[in-house]
Structure formats: C-alpha cells, structure tokens
Amino acid sequence: MSEFSWNKDVAGEAGAQPRNHLLGEPATLALSADDFSALEERVMRAVAIVRRERKARAEAQERAGQAEVQVREQAGQLENLQKELTALRAERDQVRQRVDRLLAELNGLEL
Image (cartoon, rainbow, N blue to C red; front, side, top):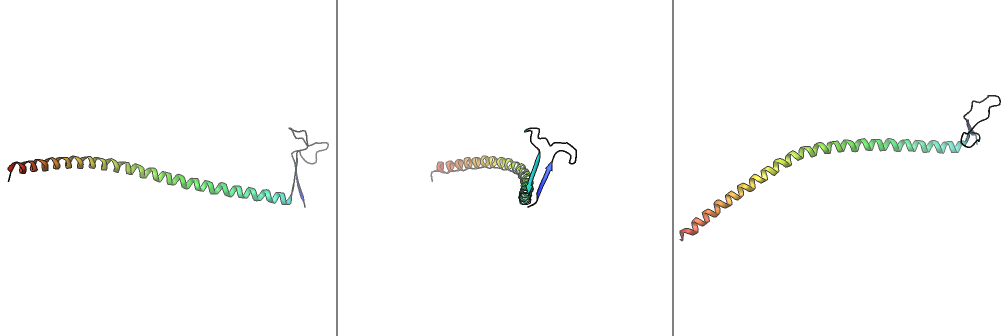
C-alpha cells in the first residue's frame, strides 16, 4: 500500500524540523490508500446528505410560505362566515318570534 504524507513545514529546508505546536511532535499525517478512499467516501456521503437536507429545507420553507398565504386567505373567509352565521342566527330568532306570535294569535281565536 502506498502512503501519503503531509508535513506542515516546507519540504527541503535544511535542518527544518516539523513542529506540532500542541504536542511538540512532528505534524505528519500518514494515510494508506484504503484509508484515504474510505475518508473520501465518507466526505462524499456527507456532501450528499447536506445537499439532500438543504433541498428538503428549501421545499419545507416553500410549503410553509404557501401555507401562510392560505391561512391568511382563509382567515378572511372565516371572518366573513362568522359574520354571516351571526346574521343568520339573528334572522332565525326573528322568524321564530314571528311564528310564536302567529301561533299565539291562532290559539287566541279558539276555534
């Protein structure tokens, strides 16, 4: 297996020693080709997941915007229907009172 090395210091400097500022050890990262391929695959899967989630978020935001518009429209309709219901109830009460008066008149005739 081939190995990949990465050194933070410039290669070829005479007497240059790699430094790891935290541990005082060389800052070399060695990966086998299989490890690199596995890492590359994980990164590609992560990118695919992020893209899919961004698309899903955009679609959800679009649906939410449409729902908000629909709610505003229906709120106006609801208000109109409530007014109409109140008017119909008032009219029903008036008709009931008139029918009650007519029934009282008929009962008063004593046929």
